[in-house]
Image (cartoon, rainbow, N blue to C red):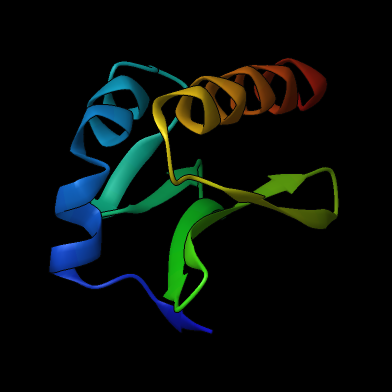
Length: 86
């Protein structure tokens, strides 16, 4: 599964905007977010759609981001992961 390209990221721009509002993470490159010096979240694309990988503790969790409801679930997971790390 390849990293999401510009066209794929265009389709989830509202989700990217929501992520950019979170002060605990920063976007180093479009669609690639870090918490401190550690990679925290990035996106992949394949024929099944767009997926986000979110670092929860030491493990990555992959979730689909193919609808507005998926975007809301992703934001909920991201906020939970940010609360769980410190």
